[in-house]
Image (cartoon, rainbow, N blue to C red; front, side):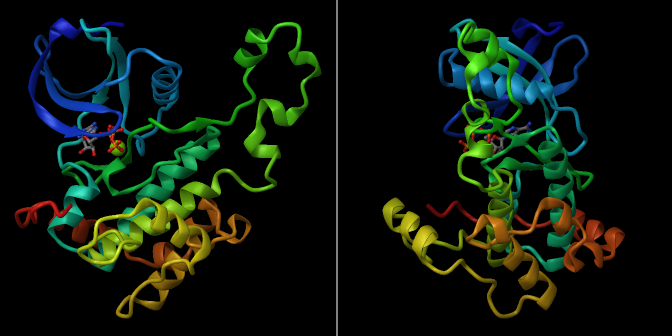
Length: 290
Ligand code: ATP
Ligand code: MG
């Protein structure tokens, strides 16, 4: 790696999450700005997986990972492209988003998901705080902390020398064969919930003002009706979200189908992008509601 930690100057904290702390840093010699995500865990299979998956990705719709490093304390870290307008989570805290801006967001996120799924990566954690924004209006997918690579892995073969020759396909790739469902459909559900949240201005599955009760939330998702768009949304938007929030994975639209859904395909792209970019410049954030 051409990057060394000692070449980087910490400027400030950009965010905290379950997986790590993200700093804004400057490369001393080039004065280029990056984001450095320091993972809380010591090196482990899960941090290894996040790093390997993220480093393998190469798309303008995915936050770029330039290098992986280790801190003096032994924590793994990722040097990432810095997204200078924060996340969609920050944006929705200011105000609900208007439909044209949502059409722009959907178009961009679908492009990113199409790329990931073509690389056999299921993101598994699509939500507003993992969709990062550049001041030019770009929206990129970040945070591969719980992503999964569905390629049948030769590594697995190598580490099970002597036994893998007799293993059935589903043992290499249980999710793809076992449950008879499309593993990629998980990202489409999350996209639907994300769009709903951005439209109403708060997480839609917990009643206003209440703290999430995880058991109740899980019951609601598994046994309740899927959440629907409120009155006031256009027919196209309601239908788009409805196509994502099908409880049966097999009935959910694929990323490819959604890209030509009228809500995305019929929107005036230039106008939607302009509306989205305008949102980046106005208004202070609402205080965090927890
Ligand atoms: P969580 O567990 O909450 O999903 P995490 O610990 O896995 O989060 P990330 O989602 O990668 O960490 O980053 C946490 C936050 O840091 C993001 O929501 C965002 O606000 C900020 N952040 C992360 N990466 C970048 C980046 N490349 N540029 C700018 N801000 C970033
Ligand atoms: Mg995150």
